[in-house]
Image (cartoon, rainbow, N blue to C red):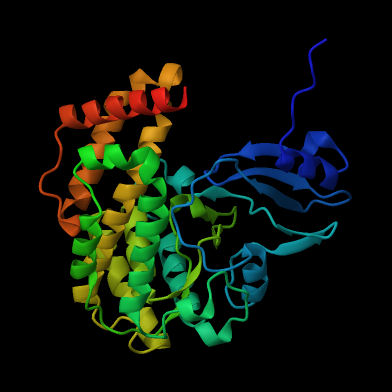
Length: 359
């Protein structure tokens, strides 16, 4: 007799919530969580049951203690966000029926006008929500909060997190790989110098992760923003920079988003776009630098190790890393971008060293 398969904690919780196992959908794709969609007994409402995946590396600073608590506080203030339900004493988010912007557009980078306009409206809704108007428990200590308007300190805290929690925390496993790719601790000194001197802007709520897979279009054409786990309070221009970096708009549509964003945030809170022409390129440069550290780690891990090393994926990983290193070279002050041959050698040497270390 075959042993019964081991169920994950998320699947066990999903089965507890629903009366019938066959209505459970999932697991759904997601880097941080294993997610199931459950139809609540006696109704048509569907909710998400999520648990954090084992061994996940967190590369982004999280501001709020609970995503569900934040969503409750935003009800009635931001229109198209998931509801939160109390199910058997647990807070669960409503599942938004529809297609993500990424799935609905497939390979087309141009966002339809209706969705584009709703994105602009979402930024308008967020810039209205000031730090003192949002009573939600936060993770960080009070003395670690940047003062309202201190955009330099806000960005500095993100660089600190990247240096300590992404670079140094993973140095035992990835230090040699970073070194062979030309990235070291001195890169953060250069990054800080090039990022300093931002203009002051009043802080507001930021989503922090507005990309195509976190934007859902329902059957009526309404655009919903999901996955608020990386939301934070800070420089509104940083949220625009993150959005532009992740969305990869066509050049003309990116310009339109910048102009529309400036128009709506100034209408709500004057000064929110102050200095954007000088500071937006700096913040986009920071996003490129941030991606270099996280993507080097994720790309190398995606190849596997030892006997499970996926050699067929190696050429694609090399191409990806060369593009990432080229994009991050200027803000991190890299002397040169490694050649494909150098990147491949570094990846192979890293996997062999890692495998021998833990074999």
